[in-house]
Each structure stands twice: as C-alpha cells, then as structure tokens.
Length: 305
Length: 266
Image (tube, rainbow over the protein chains, first blue to last red):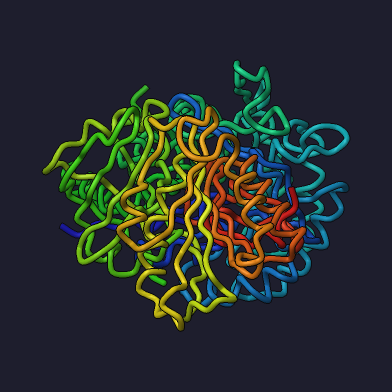
C-alpha cells in the first residue's frame, strides 16, 4: 500500500511530518553518525540571536521524573557565525532547514535577524522563538502577551515572504488567544509547546539544581499539557500546528497529529535515543498501512470527541 | 572520529569491592576507536526512569571489548549492576576528546598520573597506552599517585603495577601510604627535582582537580585534567555540560572531558 506522508506548513512542503525541535539537535552535524539526516521532514536549528551569546552558568540541566530541566540561556554563535560555520553543512543536506531566532533585549532584533535570513535562499522557513523561558525581557515573554505577539509577528511578516512559524509558550492562561493573535498577524504556522517553567531542588545543599533557579521542563512529563494545548489551538486557528512536548515514540507522535498537529517535532528524546525521529517516521508509515489510511493529512485533527 | 550507537552484550559484571563494579561489554566498533579519557553514554533501562543516559569513562578497550569501572551512586548505577552476562546495554561511544598522549616518553615528559577515588577508572586505560609508548631510556617509568578515603577504598593498585608503573598512595586516614590529600602528595613529590619536567594527567573530584591545576600552573607544568559535569545528551547538542575556559565556555562532552589545566577558569 502506498502512503503519502507529505504535509504543508504555509508555502513550505515537507516530505514527511517528522521534524526535530530547536535546541535539541544542535546544528544537525552532532547527529550525522546516528542517522540519515536526509530522511527528516525538516530540521529546526538551535535558536540564534543577532550577536553571539554565552548563555547561563552551569549546572544548566538536570533530570526530573520523566523529563529534564534546562536553562541553557540560548547560548549560540550569533547569526553571522552560524551562516559562516554551521549553515554550509545544513544546506547541503537537502532537508528544509528552519532557522529559529530570538531577540535578547529588544523585540526589534527580530527584524534584523529576519531581514538577513530573508536573503538566504536555503533558509526554508523562520521560527520566531518568542517563548524561551530562560531569556526574559523586561516584561516577561513576548508570547505571554497576545498584543506583543501580534505586533512582533505583524512587523516580521511585513519584511519576509518566507514561511513564518511562531513558537509559543505553554506558560499562559489562554493558549488559544495567543495562537489566534499570531494567526491574525500573519504567521503561517504555530509551534506548540516550548518548555514549561519548573524548578528542582537539591535538598542536601538547599540549592536549586539549575544554577539560575528556574528552568524549562521538557520530556514526557509535559506531554499531556502539550497535547491539550494542540487540541485547544486546533479548534481555534486554521493555520497548521507543529506539535511537540515529550514525543518519545510513534504513539506519542500520533497523539499530537490526532489532536490537530500537521507536523511533530522530536525534542528531548534526541538526547536519549538520537535515532528517535526516524524510528517515529517508520512507525507512522506502519500505522497508516495498518489502518488503511493513504494520506497522513486524513489523521490531522481526527480526534473523535 | 565516528560515534556508534549499539546494543552491547554484557560479557561480565563483577563486584570489585564496596560499591565498585566492573562491567565488560562486547562492542567491537567502540573498542577499536576508543582513546584513554573518552567515555560511553549508557542507557541503563528501556523505560523513563532513569530518564537520561549515564556517561561513564572507558576503563579499558581492547580487541572487541570495552569495560567500565563504576561506583553505585544512585538508581541508574544500581540498575546497571543488575545487568548480567548475556544482557544487552544500549551504548553510545566513544565520546569526547581524550588525553593527548606523548609520542615518545623522555625524561622531560615523564608522566605522572593523579587519581582521586573513581578517577582511577580512565587512568588505567591511559597507563596501558603509556606503557606501549617507547621510552628513550627504559628507566622512564610512569608514576601513579592514587588518593582514596582509606586503604579499603583503594582501587587498581595492582593493575597499575602490571603496566610497570610506580605507584604511590595517599589516604585521608593514613591507613595506607601518605596521610592526606593526593594533591599534597603531588606537591611534595614535585619538590624533588627529578619530577620537575613531568606531564600530569589527572582525574578525580573537582576540589582535587582544582588543587592539581593550581600546582601545575604555579610550576608551569603541562597538566591534562578529566572533568565531570552533569550531561543530558553527551554528544554536544544540548550545551548543558559547559565549563569556563580562557576561550569561553566549552562542552565537557565534546571539547572535553579532558582539558589543559592552563586553559580552565575555576
């Protein structure tokens, strides 16, 4: 039986819906020994800022029940060094490369980042990371405010024709409202979810296990929250959703697709089994065959509720 | 260098003493390319607890076999002890950048290995490699300083001797050898001119490594230190395990775990 796994994110067409999430796959080179990278639906880069960024002090990660906390603080080489040192490897792969970007201080930095990326043909899409819990602007996260979300997406939309993905934070009261703002401002897709803020304490030392205290929780521990948010947003917006949050295997990826995600991103699982994404890709094909479904698109949002 | 992910068959699982275990694995690709100071990242179970892999330094690698020497410190290492001959372990390796061995041992590069506690684990592998390196003068012996809490906690003394190393011991309670810290033993030894031009290779707890770094920096001696830091991925992707160096933050799992003492910022 022939199956069709291709999905669309705005103008961008993916051969299959399995992506890897920003910050969990480096710049792909780190994973070259483990898998045929060409088979991925898309690769999302570690988030870039305009200037090189050192990030937060160590310890930056710790294990938690069915998950982990991280506060890397967006360490990255900056856009120019990325284009010079990291991008050549990525663009040779022939897989859509989605470049994740963030501002450090002022939201206007997004405009400079996007205008530079707009000129680069091989940047297939841009993901606006307005939801990193470890880099806080003066007024919290952009994605915690529907108006601020609307403004930044609208401003960026004016200067690029590339597929724009807005990555949202789960640390909000009404995710639907924020997603709607991003859609109305011209975002082509929504990424759901960034990490949940959390904390873990070393009781012996009475110190937080992460140097800066509060960090972002990822892994299967957050999956039910993420699936719920994808479902809520699916009911609220028409643009495609990229679902992520604790995807470890085929079944967990299917949960997101059935809840309404057009594509899924494997994140923390890359740390544990670097081959997870491609194992899920095979698993999705098998699921379609087993259930006599030819198009994966038929599964998107197919929840019986 | 290529990194492998494979299901390695457990060939032997032996309790050495106290909480210390030795596990031998069949992992031909890893064994062939491993260098002293590198590590493997082990998934001890198939479920979510423990969630992450555990990085453990390579104790020996020869032929088709890789072995680890590890201490039970928590749930993951406890589960590891239950893996019996014939079981399989999902491992990734070899990872990281190991010790930089001299091409030739001379009076000027006479090696001193400093091990604190479980720090003996990767240094045995190094001692074996150093033993293979031709000496210009046959009397150039590798000197090994081992630090432990008590005589009962000492590990690998005979193994180092088998590689032709001279072994000196420091224990906290004086139950064997020098009473005090292994770094103090090193400091005392360096007062003897014979050792002035030695190259130091060290692995152990952070305070010990800091002391060794201070000693080597004061004397402008070359010292390679194997660091430990909490890791999430072990392959350079998550940027969790960074340390401060004079050239900025570096990943312990990728640029390390071995760093030059003169490059580190404490």
